[in-house]
Length: 474
Image (cartoon, rainbow, N blue to C red; front, top):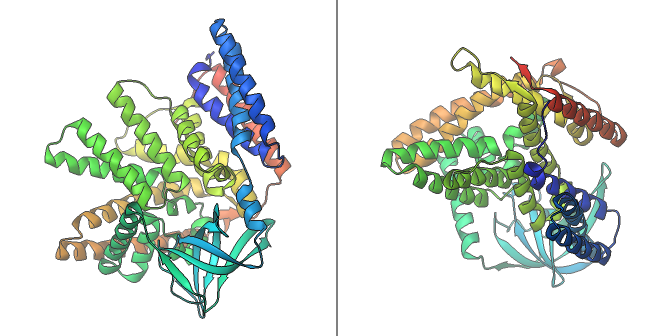
């Protein structure tokens, strides 16, 4: 029977209770009450720590993080914005997406920075009839903000009339760097690949998913939407390629590791710091630091650290679909490989496909209720599709990274771009074909009650399996 070492998982447990605190704070406006109780919990934890009662002290710390989660969450941004709806307001904003041209206007995603002089942080959809707004620029203007409900969720929309006066705001040094780098990488794909390939590569390499809205439906039906979101797969492969390239310069292992970590942070910043990207970067950094300090790292604690960083800066992220799916997917893989001891295959190279299969299986088991709740479908064949799509997609990312490295060399870049165009177009065509299979998915929506029952049974079963003995699969 396995003994569970609670102390080794304390950071992850604290993260779970921190999230529970944020969740409970959303429907209740308790304001200062959790803050006062958190001070009491801190005092009691310190008292029992000095009395050498670690168990009671740890319980108090867990309660403290639960209360801190309640303290940190605030709906002040929504309250400020809701109080300024349907009337012209002075708004400053940042453009987050490439302008998508419609018949009469450009469609964009923007982040409101201030409204009527009050600082907020709210992402909204914008219809720009002026057609003047550019990617990653900041502006100040007067406009009317509206709130609409769609599929039981509220969305904010902003309309700019054709005669709206727009004032461009200066960018910080980092913002200028991000803009120039993003535009350069977009130009690399545009100049060296055909139009369809450039759109696809810009989406998967730079996070510009607005360019592949038509294709997104096919990826969703096959359960391969995760390939369109920059995550651990993208960062992991990019870091391995960079690490390998740096080896040609005879740099030490530690220096190559340090350079790779710096690259990942820059890449995360340039691509918009999505939760999945931040999570992967922080986890990679934890493993890098562990190597330098010669210490073991618990992957669940690294996952928790990444979650803390994201939620402390933006607690509302907890309720975002991207955050939930990204963190639950990584949790599923970690837990799955801990409960079931997957034996490597005797045939060299087959283990890679075997790990893809079981990783996909664990993710599907954990994410099915959540994806059903949000997207009204259950993917059936995604486990088998990933065996084909993930290696192929990894090959495309490898070529895209090499294309960026070789972009200053015209002939080599053009030649590689031609190969990449052919390969990426074939990949999208393959996804479309797989999405047409009748059993690719079934339409079904989990209710909240069914979702809770599912996860209670699933986690209970995993706990019982873990405390007994390891199961060997394959």
